[in-house]
Length: 282
Length: 270
Image 1 (cartoon, rainbow over the protein chains, first blue to last red):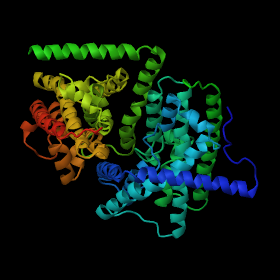
Image 2 (image 1 turned 60 degrees about the vertical axis):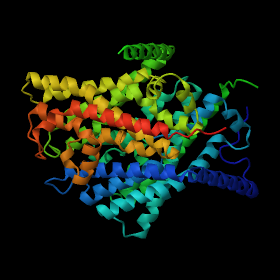
Image 3 (image 1 turned 120 degrees about the vertical axis):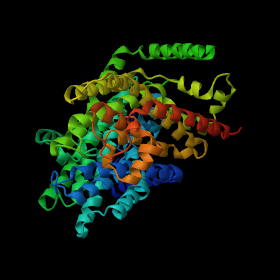
Image 4 (image 1 turned 120 degrees about the horizontal axis):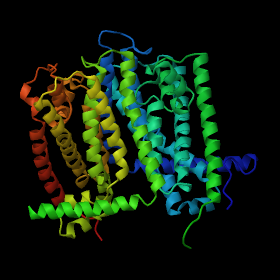
């Protein structure tokens, strides 16, 4: 079976523009799909906020009798907590199995007929989703945290810009990672265990549960060598000013690098999976 | 009484059938259970990372917090094994398939509980037991008969508390179908809350998540009793042994909530 190309059919301007317009349409659908259930978003927001309070008090307890832990002061630690709570939905850190369910049921066959590579359509859709979640579930916890605890806000507009780019790349890295463990459904009869393991690893090594900077040195070095910090720790360090100048540029470049590597790997594995796919029924 | 025996027999029969089904893919099952066992240590590693930076948390040492973690985690993973698939309820209410539950001659909750049984969740239980062993080997406890007895009783009692919270919270789907994620604030949230000494939280958060949602009785109060540790909050000592009673009360309240919720069920029509 011939799948659509991951990038472009031919590099002529009208065709490239047409395919970018298609991406935009997918993104709008992704946005609309989640915007259709506002009560679900509010329920999730409630839970994210409750967790934010619990985690804020746990981290504050570290500062009893000291003003600095792992390069964070109280305010940076609190900011870290509320930004991670905002990123939960934005980067979908607790996973998603839409793709593996489509592989399992054979619905993926419909996606393969379309002239767009399913992973590219999926990415556009997911970026639309993340925009909705960033607005409705990403920002409010940060506002609540800001009102109750007071957060470290960057004063430099360039930092805000870098943070926005970094969150965008975090969504792409997270999407590629989610696609990878979903693609496992081509080979595994029961992929849910693999999914749980993949999510738990991402949770910890991304710096979502505790900041990577709090890790003992060897563990931190290990985490830094994986794509996980690109999903959470990198954008947060940019926001709280722990990455600036050349370090900031390097951090964003590493996110871009991981995004490309993981997307290429996902595309390669996906095409191999399609070759061994058997779809039942007629 | 005969009903209870009959129900237990039916539960065992259905669960064994599901276990047999899951053992069809033996390698896959073994890998997943082992994987869950290994990866769930990352959950505890978060606490070790905190203690790599500070010697104590709210006046509790790493071994003492490990004890809280193990008690909360063990109770919660037992609950998850028995009723974790209650997460499927929102889908049933949305699609109207809850109708099927109502027409069968068995209790509604009983039928839901018997819908699934994921044996690989024992991986998480095994991890909790390992952490409990580590905690008990490293804390100093003057063992008495009362302390040992309480330790044995609070594990199932804690599971009953978490189970009651879970069932009561998921009832929200009978009123607002999309809002099931709000239940996570007290289920997964309650389990997270109980893993840390509750004296580190602010008073209003403690009122809500430790007493109204009675998670403080799963780990914090019994741990004080077992360790013989003075309560940093200075609360009455009888609270430290009241976990079994609180568990029964929570179950009774939840039974009332469940009944009201099921009466409120509206089918999907058609």
